Image (cartoon, rainbow, N blue to C red; front, top):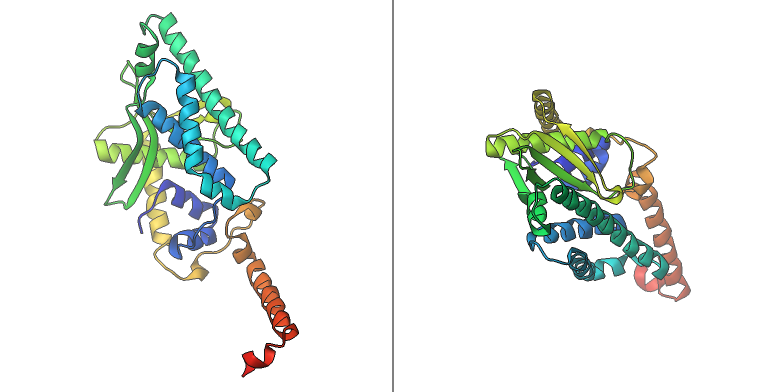
Length: 287
């Protein structure tokens, strides 16, 4: 099985969720958080892909409207109330506005310090070398999409990953550290060079947390990949125990894992039989 930072973190969070998602490959129903994350990531990718435009704010707005429209059908499937849908729509706008304000501050700082002559020059100094770069190592059977890879004027290379969640404050979660470590390993394997830093970019709050890439980080990532491969060779559900936590109720497979799905199926079956009886169709079914 080919692993990714996401699938590895899923296994470490809950082996049973990994089983449903990556062994059985059960479809994951859309949810507003996944759609929002996808929209924001795509807008930022296009923001750098299209190059410098004098009115960056207008360009960002245009890109967002286009991407929100692309996801219109999936948003309809969620059947959210109009007020809630508008709130989520505005939340995306707020995140992108925060990103652009922070980006503008960096541009102004480059101009003030004399490192950039104008907005265009500053934009291209800040523009990442790669956007949504796919990296894969066939020997390790691991791959992943990196949101951005940036090398500054001093030659310092940083591998960055965008996050649209509500987390804020000092430090990053363990799963983010694992993700960053695997990206650093993949970068080294595919380029033959070691990145200087990995970073988590909290778009909602305009914060970035950088971590220096070290030999220990690379070794730990290798060990985690090998361990996960070893523990996911089987397709026996009993080898993937549940790891119950307060986050279970937000899992796409909560009803299946908790047994609620079977209960609901039984209730639906009884209701269907009652309808058949009430409509005098029971004898036909038995016959």
